[in-house]
Length: 273
Image (cartoon, rainbow, N blue to C red; front, side, top):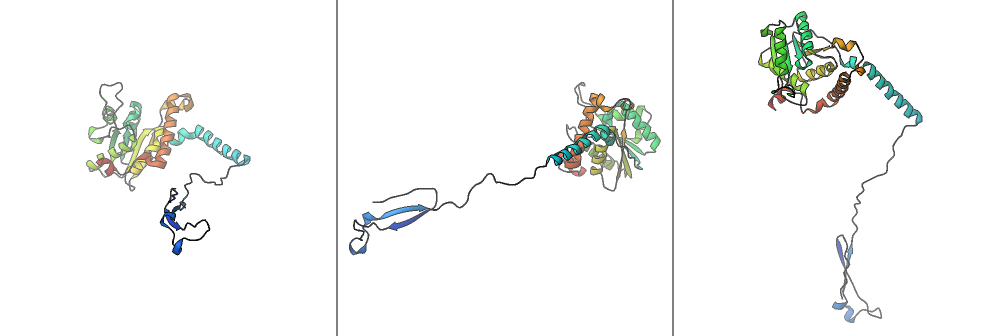
């Protein structure tokens, strides 16, 4: 008879001789055909799948935990006290081009016009994308509105450049910087340096983005305009300023570490997309 053993591995066939009751072989020393036993023996698979492994980790002691907590507490208090002033940096360069982010509002545009008249700039660039359109029937361009306000404030039209950026809900500062770069390139304007005029807490992020987009040989300065009412009360007493500080803190860190998730800082690549 034939006996078969099954398992999950590669079979190895061995022929065994079936001995008689006395343990002797059959006639002429051959195993009868009906006495042949085919045994399938299977090899064990050598690879073991393991999903977890044991490892050693270091945990802080009570003293270490206290030190870590104290450091974090000091950083939070320091940012709570000086965070807004740190972000609202002003670092002018000897620039001949003044870039104004149009979304900062009418008061900001007036302050930018005063800066243009005092600073001896060749051109002033109004930048910005489209408004949200929640109140208007049709979205308007921040750059165009800022340019109109500048002309009403007495700035000659031929010295105003309009840099309309792409309509996007993300990377707005990046798109604004790309639009400014494109406008200067198309106008054949060789700028020695740029000063970016923007709202206070947004200043440090704007300077970082514009410096990445534009040539490394082009010096980027920044002017963080702070409205007069900001000096009357601390930021935590205003819901708008609190939200603004939180947004700018996250945005600056994200820009500093991850480039806001952009694929490229190149304005040429952005123009092709």
